[in-house]
Image (cartoon, rainbow, N blue to C red):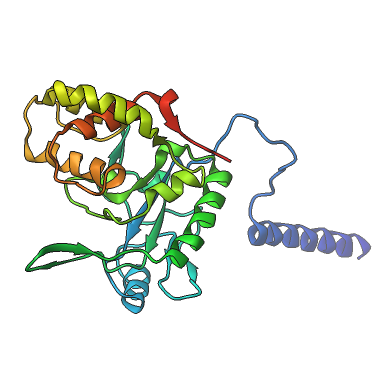
Length: 272
């Protein structure tokens, strides 16, 4: 009888152990950590929603597009985390930068509530970004970049990674403020002026522009022809670095900025 009770207790203990294993999953020893590892996140992509605040929230939470963060247009500004950084948000789409493509899995996306642009009788007008919105955006970017060790040259606008189909965050997005905050490279004005004077006398050909744009990171045709695709890439470049004129025309100032930016020793980067 005693042996039966012992056997019953052993069977019960075994059953409990099995059930406990099923409940808690595989037991892992996490006391050791490999030094050879890094974040999967390599890019930070900035967008505008082209929608008002309520519609932006609805679309980004209930449809097939999403972003990790949404920066509101209220004051004080609310920042929503819509997708955990460990998850992929569907915000980059068909995209390329420096040989990397389809950047959704390797990027964090920030959407900013901004109506984008309107076409009117006097042409296209863009909505500015209020300073209070940018004052909240910059600390958010700094935090993300620090945690994932994102390189300054990989903080990008949607237009830059998809210049054939996307216009955001547009020419009024204050990239220079990000440079002043030490987040991104920016060309030295004196270097640009010196080079521009030379390029006014002899402008590089389209082949040069295409090679330099590709070197900078854009997916650019290498045809030697100023086709629509090349113009779109130039527009994306100019909208970021020379927003006063972003017509896709290969001029001396654009050439000078491009030359400085592809010579990294001659760019400002106050990374902090």
